[in-house]
Image 1 (cartoon, rainbow, N blue to C red):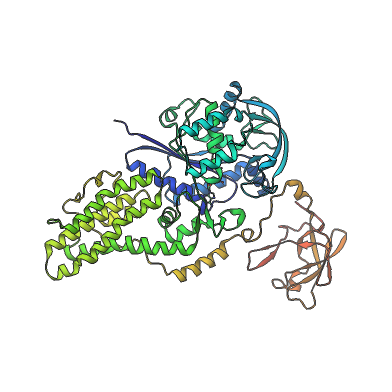
Image 2: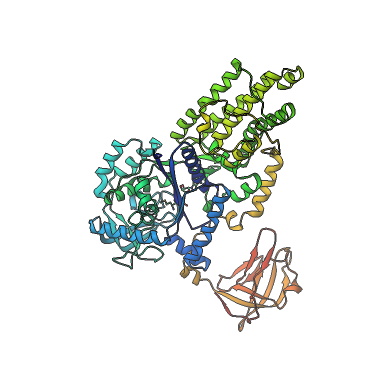
Length: 640
Ligand code: ME8
């Protein structure tokens, strides 16, 4: 008999910045669900990828002086490395710049045009480029984007529109008939009250003011709106409208689109309406999880409060991060990240509970039975309590995972671990050994080894690498499924444990917190510690005049440790400029050097000394160095 299928997706990540721990949250949860379902007998397809088109990417690439493709390639490498480090076992990675995806998006637009679901008109309204979202005047919050609070721009351009309004009634009917479609339930009400009830407007689905996107085949000066391009990834990745559509036939409709709460709107209104227009079945569930906060703010690059998952996993290992994200953040709600909670949770659960159980058991079996797991000889009431707990936990964990609650699932698995630790204290194996009660000692050791086998099997989807190490220690192969959990007592004869190193080492929380603070200071790029500087256009940049200048003279400004006053040759002109680099350069050293000057900066008086420009320097928080041309090019030359 063929296995039931399960299709799960993460959003495709924007390729317009670096990735932080908040991004890992969605992916780690999906990975745990996908792994759980695989072990539970499902044929799983887990899709993730990158969202690589759009105005935001084009602007970032321009600012970085590279092509959009070069820009997204770099981010692609970064995210693939990140998922590898975190042990994310996806079945497919889609990039929206993949040729098959672009071609299918074009076919989808053609199909929508043919069914009269799209028409050409003029868009006039507000656009938030960071969110790539259109807003009406009334939807704005204090004139800003209601999602991210940033500036919006008034946009007027010829566009194609999707007849979203046509699907309003069908959407409401669909929600009524499928009350579990949007989870948690509160998000369903939010969608109905905030978006559907005020009336759905037709959606602008093409742009003409930039060209980094999928060109519409019937009107190539238009590129596809990035959200339509992005949402369709869930079907193009499976081969929809392509020669080989076997995966699409097998896995569509999706069982679960896991998304952050801010993008539920796109997945529960636009996406189902689009699928209705394409005459396709709708996904079974969209789950909008909460945000990982830092203090009270969403962790995000623009807020400069990101936690670098590479740094954390290098220090503690991927499973510590996975465990923390899955266990500590209440699912569906926002959760606040802090280093201390991570370290305390690691010490309490992974070092104390899990680590101790495994190392104590392996050490006792080694000491009392020459490392071979002994055979049990009759169970007592106490043993039966543990046996029953083990045998019932899979059902509980399955129910937790059906509710998509990894924290509950982990709490249920840790109940075995905590009970087994208590069992060691209750049975005091060292006394049994002293009293020569070998039979009872053997049973106790066997019960413990079995508890570890049950716990490690159940932990596999959540902390796979640790589970593999536990199986190595108890001398058993790591199972691929939950088949071994049907019955307690499956460890056979002659299995040998390998004590080895500790699974996790205790962390000195105070010391480590200081280390982490130091690391944050050193590693956080300067820009992340400063208030956000908004993006500028190439035209904005053209307003800044940068010029080479040669130092004719240099003196310290009286009564200042920091300031130097320069006379600079700028072409035919001599300029006086004050610069705060006295702590880094001597006056003699600067003589004759060529610097780069912001030469159209409004004159200002610094400590009473007139300054006509600013010398460009690079700084890393510890030192400051001035910027100089790579070869002598003379003074007064334009820098671009
Ligand atoms: O939204 N806490 O991409 P994205 C929890 N390209 N989750 C967070 C988070 C945080 N601090 N920050 C980000 C996009 N995320 C679109 C998706 S799908 C067709 C297109 C989550 O890179 C966020 O909620 O901005 C989302 O689920 C995922 O990271 C990707 O966000």
